Image (cartoon, rainbow, N blue to C red):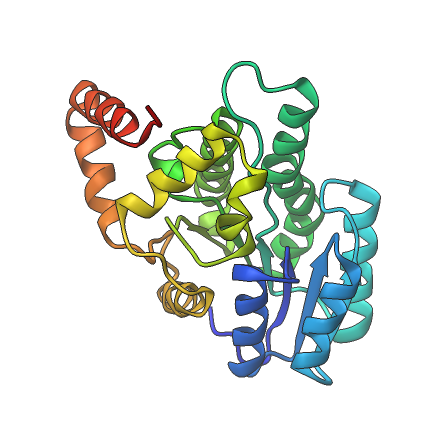
Length: 268
């Protein structure tokens, strides 16, 4: 998957990883880069940075009608979508007391939005014989997320859906990659600690204790390299692969280790 002359859609593109992916796609020579975000002004600002091949669109990625309108505008402006980056995500909720509405929001944005996009894109890609779906999950999708049940569960689900897409359509011209970073210097990680619960602060400490905090541009570099190789797992933090191997090798030992990590970062 080369980005030169490609039509690329990036959700959650107003900031963080999404913004870096959109700018990098333009740098790689994409014919059109559609920046989508609930923050319409932010999406338009990133599109303005890109220039003539950029288009900023506001909308809810978990709303089927909004996604339909997004894809229609992308095609009208630049032609059929070649690469869809399902990057929008939310990190909310803590333990089993998390309110139902927070679970619903996490499921809608982190999982159902991917299903909605794929439902609309896959038929056309099969007809054309090509297309690429990039899912932004998280290292939490391969491992887990201390401090947030909704995040851990929905990122597992996003990874599972990407796996299913690859298994089902990988021999029919559709490429799939799943981005699974740990700590990245984005608003999601750097939110004001005073506004966070103890569990949310613990989740941040777990991420930052596990490895380096990367810049979004470093993540975009890893994505471009993986797309060129059509590699499923995109791991900007290489150590995630070793953590995943340890988990698979001895699940109970890994769970004990995660409990020890949780204890070490839990406030007294």
